[in-house]
Structure formats: structure tokens, C-alpha cells
Length: 63
Image (cartoon, rainbow, N blue to C red):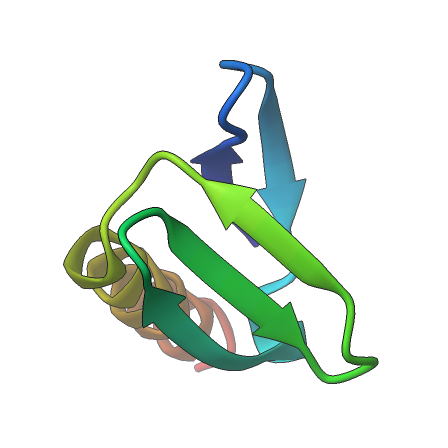
């Protein structure tokens, strides 16, 4: 799960496993595996970093 911010500054938590792909046009748009799209304030790089950190924590937790 990663914390993100919608364009209206509302924070939400997203299950990182639901991300299909991420685009910048110029806002960041996340497309989920169910084709739902979410526009966020974070950059693509920030999202990728958060997903990597989430996955890293999950691996440590599951040892």
C-alpha cells in the first residue's frame, strides 16, 4: 500500500499491486488493472520509489 495525493490535495492509500501503468501528461495518471484511472500530484518517479519501498518492506516482513 502506498500513500498518494489526488489533485484536490486529498490523500489516499493505493494497493500498489493494482497498478497497470503510470503516465505523465503533464499530471501523473495511474491506470489500474481494472482500467480505472487516478490523477495524482506525485511524479512517476515518486510513485516508483514508493512502490519499490513498499515491496522492500513486504519482503522483510515475510521472512
